[in-house]
Each structure stands twice: as C-alpha cells, then as structure tokens.
Length: 230
Image (cartoon, rainbow, N blue to C red; front, side, top):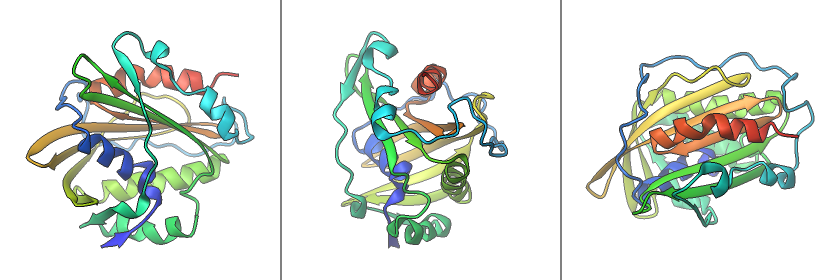
C-alpha cells in the first residue's frame, strides 16, 4: 500500500462523496458498457492554447444559480492527501511517486466547487477545473483514468474508513477534444452507492464532474460551456 497525493483529482473526490453518503443513484447510468472514450490531444482547443490562471478558472465554475433550484453550495474541505491510500491496484499505487514529487498529475492551476441537491441534501455533484498545456493535461488525466480502468476492483482507505470500489468505463458524449468517463460502485460502512466521474478536455482546460450519475449527465454540457466562456 502506498500513500500518494494527486489521486486527489479522482480518489479523494470519490472518497469524500462516499463518506458523506451520496445517495444510491442508478439513474443516468445507461450506456455503461465499456468503451474507450479518449481521443488524440490537440493544442488548438476552443479554450485557447495558453493555460488559464486559477483565478480565471474560479470564475468559470458552475454556481447554484447555474444549476437551478434545489442546489446548495457545499464548503470544499481542504484535502489531506496522506489520509488517502489504495490497496489492490498496483497501477494506482504506482502513480504515487510522480504525484509525491509534483509531477504532471499535480496541475498548479485549478479551481473546485461542490453542491448538494434535494431536500435531504444526500445527492452531491462536484466540479473541478484544471488548466495546463494540452499535452500535460492529456497525459496527466489519461494516466489516472487508465490506471483506474486497469483495476475493476480495489480498495480506497480514507483515514480509518475502507471503501470497496468497483470501476467500469462508460461512454461519453462527443464533447471537447478528449474525454474520459467511469462509473464507480462503492461499499462503505454497510452502504452501497454509485458515483460517476467524467472528464472533458477542451484546449488547455479539463472539466471534471463527479457525483450522482444523473446529476453528472444533467450538468456536463453546462459546465463545459461555462469553462469555455471568454
């Protein structure tokens, strides 16, 4: 078991959703047969060829007003990377060395937000924006999703909580220049739930939406459009 930092891009988000009790949502999970969804990287994206600052990315995050009635912004807690570890997936464990030394996966330009939805607030959706050169984004995000796809079953340990994970690659609408999407089923503390995570690269920006599958599918287009705004 190796502790590592930059699976914060994926694993810490998923662990957070799991630990806060994201509702068991099987809706929106149609089209879940495994499929390769990434395409060749290109520098000529609609978001331009120059990486954007974190301040600019923050202005392009979705808001509760963008999402509509029933959404409440959730405070984004500081990540404690050394609290998250992986068991049973060597490909993910091997990413730890690069992440720990601040390699390609640790994009310095980033912004994040998260929301709860519904009267009970148990459904969640989060958005992350990252910016770097197209090649670095493609390599960094692709490596993480490829690593997860290589392990249909593994375990994420967050603090004293062990989360049993299963992973399935899913199809993605033909948006942006590259796209990745996976469906995660987790079991923790006697609770079983489903989280979807979809990443779209457009130029020098990657949009990542994670949460209840139906919410991810409902807001992906909107998030991408705002991320591309000038």
